[in-house]
Image 1 (cartoon, rainbow, N blue to C red):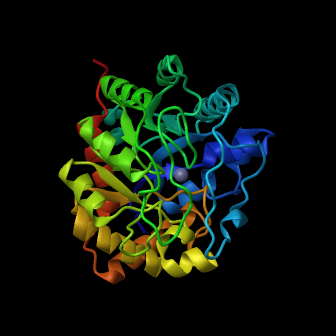
Image 2 (tube, rainbow, N blue to C red):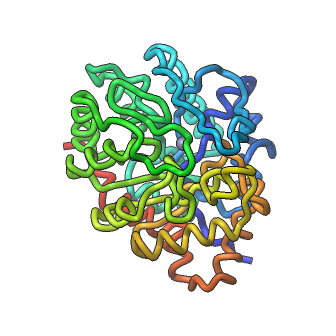
Length: 348
Ligand code: ZN
């Protein structure tokens, strides 16, 4: 069987490896977590955005924190810049070790991503999930860019000096707080100068519109639709339409808690919920601006998907649902690649 190649908008494999400590290359080579060498090969996972994420403490991720029923998880406080930098640099180091071992191919241009989709190790596009490690002088951004960083999320679900994240709150859209700060607007301008992707997942709705005002294509690498699951981490139809109008991208987040209302309450969801979300996002955003943004290694997964190796089951379900082959190709990799062709620019 020929696997449909997948290029995915978000995973936390580097954070998982950094938190687990030990030899990251050996861990990545064995079947542990959602993304690893055998799972990628089994699932046709040919690359994606690999996040550098700074947790509050260096300990294995605990997805049970999402079992909150109707409660919300409030925003944690701002992270200390130095601690966040240690995490980001450490995880970038892991990515480079994995590349040296032949397990990943760190790509910094759209052409390299496109050719890497079909040959060599899976593509790693380095992404910073929350600019906690960058100070107002923005110098750390240039350092991370030199290490291969090509995508930046202004915030995770906590404040930074640049903007405000949304809490994990259900029955509420992303209008939970202020927009970008003056430093945040400078950060966005610098990312645009560098030809980087600017990610609005986790950002407040006001922040989202500030990014739009800066003229950036609107991207939410791993967010779903509020119309199906009204959660602050998801996007209203107005936001989804704006993503489509800007030639941006939204990536389907597989996290059970963001897929459906029932998923938020129970932590359980199924592949059907993924399809309902995709169907709505394609309808509202447009066929060319939707992709996958699994959140592998960063979130609890729906029944039937235990890791990247099960992607063919999701794709088979898309076929049964009635998505035709060209649309499936676009959702699984084509739209992300076209977006990168248009937006991953050489620095000006
Ligand atoms: Zn995230």
